[in-house]
Amino acid sequence: MVELERRYEHFCVLTQNVDGLHDVAGSRNLIELHGNIWKLRCTQCGRVRMNRDVPLALLPYCAECRGLLRPHIVWFGESLHAEDLSRSEDGLRSCELLLIIGTSGVVYPAASFASVARAAGAFVVEINLERTPTSALVDVSVQGRAKDLLPLLL
Image 1: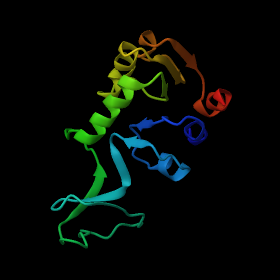
Image 2: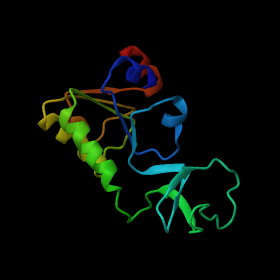
Image 3: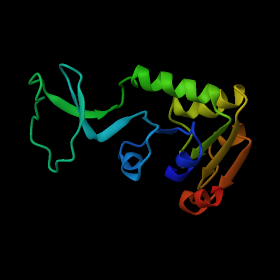
Image 4: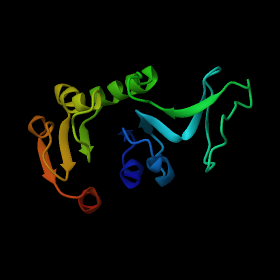
């Protein structure tokens, strides 16, 4: 993914993963829809900062305002961050190619991304171990391991 980003100026990674591995790998134009477990967000002032402490101190506090810190992830029942959603929608409506890789295709709003991009004229490719509900909505659905298929795109 990082190599694709290097080759294409307007390449963007939208991910539901919270593991932070896209960032560690070097992705720069990255939208982490569900947040990043290695970041902490202050419940009082809203500041977000990277923290790779293991284990995390019990009841960590913000160095700026002393508010309680929490993982910068979206828990079930919480809304996605408006800025991430807006950036995602902008990218989907302006992309020429959307690669949907390794997802069940059932978690919204990401499950709607194929339809949004196709409606805007993008060519949509799904790469997954098996067919998903999204498979019928894409231009091409390829079954296999992403680690085997993605290098072929280069």
